[in-house]
Amino acid sequence: MSKQLIGQGVARGIVIGRAHLLAPSELDIRQYHIQRGDVLHEVARLNNAFSVVRAELEQLRANVSEDAPAEVKAFLELHRMILDDSLLCDAPRDLVRTRLINAEWALTIQLEEVCRQFEAIEDEYFRSRSQDVRQVVERVLRRLAGGRPSPMALAPKLQEGERLILVAHDLAPADILHFREDASEAVAGFITELGGPTSHTMILARSLGLPAIVGVGEARTAVAEGDLLVVDSDAGRVHVQPDEQALAEYRRQILLQTQARSELRKLRGKLPRTKDGIPVELSANIEMPEDVRDALDAGADGVGLFRTEFLFMNRDQLPTEDEQFESYAKVARAMKGKPVVVRTLDIGADKVLSYSARQSLGLARDGGEGQGLEPNPALGLRAIRYCLAYPELFLTQLRAILRASSVGTIRILVPMLAHVHEIEQALQFVARAKEQLKERRQKFDGRISVGGMIEVPAAALNLGPFIERLKFLSLGTNDLIQYALAIDRTDAAVAYLYEPLHPAVLQLIHQTIRGGARAGLPVSVCGEMAGDVGCVELLLGMGLRRFSMNPAQLLSVKQRLFELDSKLAARLAKRVVRMHDPLQIRAALERAERQGGAMGRPLAGPRRTPRRR
Ligand code: PEP
Ligand code: MG
Image (cartoon, rainbow, N blue to C red; front, side):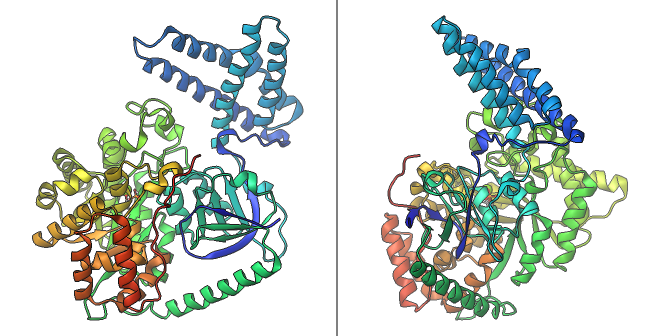
């Protein structure tokens, strides 16, 4: 039966496709037979998952405070004992070998066997321990899920021309990277039950040009495998099993969108400027070197943000200096002299290195195995903090970026700075990397600019040291909003509070743009706000002249600029920054947009009502 589900759209467009439900990543227990030649690999996956969980439990134990109740340690000890029991750790290996089944299947068979034995015990205490066994096994399964094969292998059969809509409880940035490699042709869109619109997962989905909707509460219950779905990302709506009449209407809208897109393409070669002739720079955000194609295709003035951390994810070994150099140089060469802003590693929070990559760093400071164990990863060892904690990692990357500066116009951007000493240390590292290259007699641009991201409110409020020490600033509004409003950008439960138009956020942005302009320092916005057509007039009015966004948004933003008068925009911004209510601000922007005769669209914004998970 036809039904509609509501969430938050995170990219533009409507797509039709067949639902493919992904097992929750936390408990992926797909069962399949393997070839004899794959036995060693499957056993190694099991061994690795067990040792990772062992390390996790040890770390948890080490973190238990002295005054914690004795039961806490006893409970962790019990889990550790269960994990080491040969019934759980040896028997599944034998099952893999003898029955030629995958690791997850073997482990679940053994889990049921162990639980059956427990449940047969008369003593109630022991009987109830089967729950602990399940929890331990779930932990191991979760680890196994980290290295799972492509979910596409299990997708429903498609008719000619059909594509898939992936329906998941949650997706990690790493999952999207897998889809890019394995299945980008087959996937038309995403729906997730969790997640915020500016989570890195969704930024990546957007970079694939795929409509996606997050925070669709019970998506995996309401949608069945193979259902026909319409994802209307503009409206934040999923239509499940639409009838013929609704389908025809969606097809008509898709056609209109396709026509509008081909109209937009005509703007490619035109220089971006306002109606009154003020030139504006429109650059592209990229995540992988190959994305440079999209940047060029959209006619970008440069790469305003290269999120390099994606080169480091989903792999066992960290990329070498030479490998990184090739990636940065590839982008620099492709941009043919146009500026490329390479951001240094912003690992941490929702972007994690693999366990073995982290092991190669010594795992000295980030709590052993992982991010999951950090009390609050978005506030933890992330971005520049991570780089300063691992100097070799940072220096290697800086040398690679510097070397690439000899083949194009490269700038270095440092994320998440908040303290003067962080800026100074970052600059010292750049100087050290230059020295090392000089000793090696390798070429680089000695006058390379180093800039900083303004994405921690403390930085925006104390701009002086940034202006004194850096050559340019880039406003990371995604994190600025997250940290100013104390909203985890990945958490669907609080997505309704993620408000780009909150007066406090606008003050921080305005102050930064003004501060930069007064000091003659270039300021750009590279967060998602820069690509939000509904925010262009306000940002322009605040004095912003450099926008960097997902290439998919670039031509829409350019079209909007052509309609805008910079003086009217400045007047609008002046009024808006005095307002105290986001609803009032939103209404003022929408009114201005209508008056300007713009074709526009509703401003992206948070939902008005909280949702329970
Ligand atoms: C931002 O925070 O706005 C930003 C551009 O960086 P990222 O989204 O990668 O955190
Ligand atoms: Mg950021």
